[in-house]
Image (tube, rainbow, N blue to C red; front, side):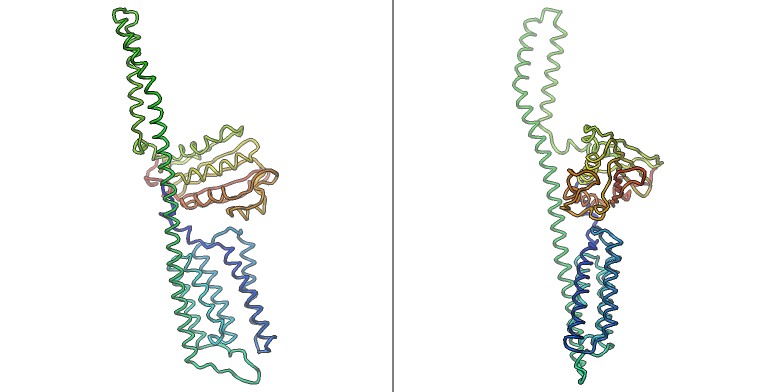
Length: 439
């Protein structure tokens, strides 16, 4: 666990394209393609193979319906999944162009769109593979396609030189636009990392400065009365030096005032280095630190450590993980009836923290929207006054995912009720010393 955002070390979350973005773009393409086929076929009366065109358009619509039913709206596709979906778009559009004139069709330039989308969010190797597929499709269309729909009583012959120019234009546009989009996206990501790192560093420095300021203020305020006590102690020692009844008490009083002066002197020199021993944090201590502020609300919080032969995970104090887990615990306590159970499981490969409560659980429609900021819905089934799962959970989920965690939200299985949240990390993301040593 690190002080700086984990996104500076693990960029996998950036390469996950939001599924809802792709489905919305595809619905727009379905509508545009349908209107275009109808206008060309019925508005101008050109001979268009409408049956085959609408069959391909229906495939796009079916894929959208399938993905919307199979995955929640906030789901983010991994690079392989996003590349597969974008490859389908290239092939579907290539099929439509094959039946409507190939590169002679002015809409052939749209073949560069999936590659541009990939370049903004996907790894370079996936974008290159998608670009190779797009170039292959453009090359095949340059030589093989049905004639361009035209007036029935005439034939429109497109010179090959014009086809070659269109091929060069599409390929160069794809390469230039994809490279430009990649550069802009990379710069924006670097700026976001810098801002996040700056924010956490400034926050840490503010905390340290606040501690130093409080220590200096305490030393200054306590210094005057302590000096008075020390002065009075000296005068008493002079006056009662020959009285054995008070000798021991006077020596004790003087030693304790000297000790107080030493303590105040150390307080005035507090620095960030004094907290070095707090940087390393065992997993059990991390859980207790997260839970401690929520034990005073009348809800029993039980921590269960499943037996494991592995030694306890020891990492670095990470404010992002502390905040993210704290938000999940707070949400569970807010809606639990009497108990929250935190289960910690660690083995050679993974560290898993599960949070269960005995409250009403998540509403079914809410489960598909978890992770979307500013969601204006109630987050539990029977709490009509509770807040929505909005920005707080969105930030917590994002921070935990940046640390390398994966999150799962669900309801507990009947007959029990309540919500179940599972946060899982690869062990190497959490452990400073690796997982090769057993207890």
